[in-house]
Length: 424
Image (cartoon, rainbow, N blue to C red):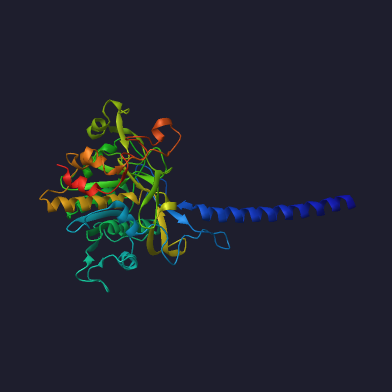
């Protein structure tokens, strides 16, 4: 019995030591994760052919005493509007253009949140609100054409990101936020219809669903004569999401972008979550096959068309007062959700330059916007991302020289607005 008791005490002592070592190891792992950057996906349902998801990730900045992820800060974390605009080198501010943003559910405090964001970073505030300068403000409209709907914490984060960062890149453009009744594809596509009918020249969509037979029936919703839809390509690597696979949209993939404090770019590689691949159903497009010539290896449309910083560990600062996991304040957000509104803003600035030159805005009906991006003029203002992977499917899942199904043609650089303005 003494032997058994001694053995038991020894086992307990050993377990205490092991437990202590594991605790220290866990703490070290948490500290290392904070140092190298940790992220998590925003909670949401899985995509299917009926309902859409928003490809959204957030940075984690440590752990609470109870090991809960710390998602917010009292001050901004992530890239700032000044850094991003410096990296893009845009010559315009979006004046005279309307960017529509289509999202599901309601963000009840979006006006006050975008004003916090704007005042923090020295951007124009919403016209007609307290503190906004009448000579330096922007017009913001929230529309609920399907009727008022409930708030959703995850979609509220998406709305905050989309509105604030479209505004950051094109600070004088009007913004029309279209909130749909739910995240069903039918409701969201109706939101696009509303945006197109109410003056938007660019329509940003940070959502998508898995591909499905018959998806092409929806393609015409973005086949617009005087407007362009941008779509995030997905956040789970290969394959990507629909409607990014539609030939009438600009599909935006993701990268990991390293910048200095002044916006100088140090490096950029493909992000592992970048949605991309070859469509199961959509035919190859002429603007892709002609760009790639005989080397184009696919019989179907491939995405993305272009890319943008999407890694949440190199993400952007977003202010959101709607609690998510009981936290609110400054989030650091990423995902290809971040690229769709910022590319929409870039196109809006290009349209501003086009208007100054007496040209109509870019449209999608004749694939004009896509042809402009795949043209030689745009090639000089897109950085060809050649490294990085979004899966384990051979060459299709690897970034490479020229077009690839991880980062598309590449990411925007100085001159992209001028290139878009010069397109016929």
